[in-house]
Length: 306
Image (cartoon, rainbow, N blue to C red; front, side, top):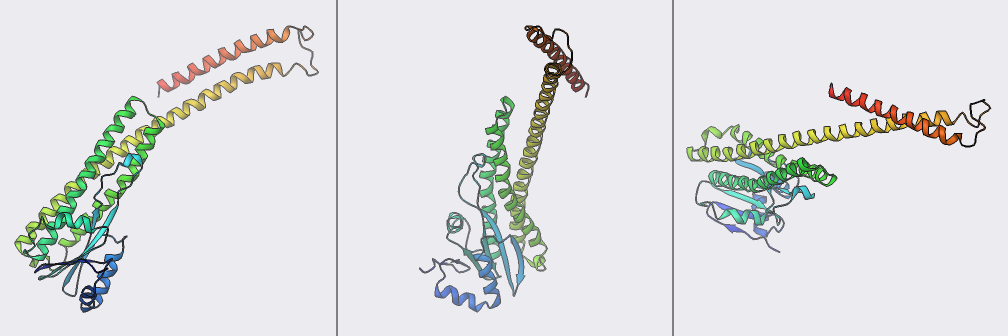
């Protein structure tokens, strides 16, 4: 199957899952750079980065899948890299079958007759904005869980909280990688030679990624504090259960200790009276209950003074 290629004066899109003969010739004409870029584009685990090589800018950006998922239900959002090759005259975009739909949704929203660097920065801005919808969904799920946990912490709610925490990591890592890539972009040796329009577009992209990073940071801090609070609650409940079991065990020990004397070769009062076992059971049970009551009060008083 041949690749679907859209060719503009400055822009060309290549699907690396279906390279045509023209695509292969183009990559071969780039020499080692073409081989490296193809490796980046075909690696689904490639991290975001930017570098200059042979007069081109190689740029990898993390895209969020175009599908809203419920993180609290255990679904995990997919982060997919897209590779760009930019020069002063050309922009090559390397898509895959999975990222083709994401690119198709935004490519017509940019003026493709502009300077290549400006085109790619506008695309990065649009890709960054796609994160906001999922971050807003994460916020709504977080607020819902907070309300549910305040009413009654349950195993289901705590499981959903753990799912929300783990699922959020993928989005936050994608945003973090993109932010680091943009920071490196500004440190490129040729950045100072970029046109004012490109620098202005770059600042707009940075504003979007900073806003996304701030939203993710706030979301992370709230989740961490929420999880920490309920970890403490669960820990305290476990301590209370262990304390109750310990007090109960001490009470049972009283009964066991007294009754264990009977049946031994020890002379005890009323040992030959048939009904004495009932009297001993009642008395030791009362003693055990009184002892457990005072132990519980002692423990509760100690907790109140902490």
